[in-house]
Structures are given as structure tokens and as C-alpha cells.
Length: 252
Image 1 (cartoon, rainbow, N blue to C red):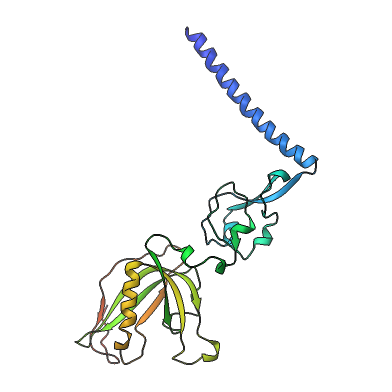
Image 2: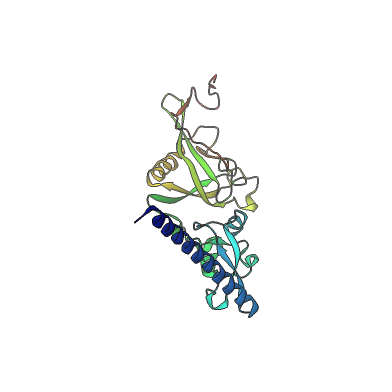
């Protein structure tokens, strides 16, 4: 085969490929135009990027993961949303993928999804009883990440504090009863997603809570982490010299 013949064949192949692409675009547009003109078109909410289970619909919409598309009525999936406002305030109950139509069966209120359905692998859920201050029940919300810390009184009367779990997901928050407002013994609780090892550490801390410093009955605290760019650096236990309430304070 001569070089001119080879070049001509390449050109012909490229032209045919371009023609096929143009034909496909024209066909797609023709189908959409035909549907619109015949009154058989319907606007539907479509997933533009994979969405994980538990994601609020409002968040997915704000991130551009949901958009309207026009489809033939015959292609409409049963229960598909044709108005995004109808799904506001709900969450995605199961993973949805790019190109899927968002349907009512895949959305619901947060409690429609069981705790067990929101755990995978070595993840475990445990409810931690806390007071409003140590547990920050008035400041944290489901979806936040927190560090869980526990303090122990040593035989030397030193207080040793450990980070039991860093970056734990808050799955639910139950504030102390309103009727008990101002009562220092009032307790709420937070539902945390931990690993199986972290659950053991937390259970141990709860079992040892009777050995708390005399300044109070609370030996477990949570510290909320930022929603963006939070980091977790492993560090050894913090030890304060002396016993409460006259404990020493480190210089640094």
C-alpha cells in the first residue's frame, strides 16, 4: 500500500467517525425534540455523580450532584421525582449512581434507615451517656465528627487523659430532658460510630467512671472537630500532676 493510499484511508476513517458522532447527536436531539413537540416529555431529577447513602438531598443538590433532565414519559422510572422540592429535607437511603433517576423509594427521613444499615466492615455503634457540657449535646449534631477523651486517676493521684477515638462520626444526639435543664446530673446521649477496638476502649472508660476525680462525676468528654480540614495527630496520654481539685498544670 502506497503512502498516499494509507493517508487517504486514514482520512476516510476519521470522516466516517465524525459523521457517526454527528448522526448520534442529531438523533438524540431529534428524540428530545420529538418528545417535547408531542407533549410526551417529562422533566425528572437525575443523579449527576455517585451519591453515598445517608447524604441529605439538600446537600447533594447544593453540590451539583442532582439536576433536571428531560426524558420520554415511557422512560420515567416509577416513583421518580419530577420536582426536586418534593425531596427537600430527606436523605438518600441507599447509594445512587450517575445517570440514575432519583426515586421516592431511595429517599426518606433519617430514621427510615436503621443504625445497622449505616455500618459496614469493622464499624460499630455505641450510645455514650453524657451531660450537656462534657458531651456538648447542645453544640454537636448528627454528621459531625468528634474526639472522645477519657481521664483516669492513677495511684499516684495523677490524672491521665487518653484519646479513645479520634474523628468519630456522630450518628444521633439526644439532649438532656428539657425538664431537667440546669440540673447538673441531667444526662443526654450521643450515638457514635466507632471501630470495634474503640468501642472496647469506650466501654472500659464507662466501666471505670466511678473512679472519677472529686471535682465531678464525669470522666469522659467529647471535643468537636471542624467540618473542613480537620486533622488528627496521635499523641501519648496527657498526665497532670497531683489530684483534683489542686492538680498541677503543665507549663506547656
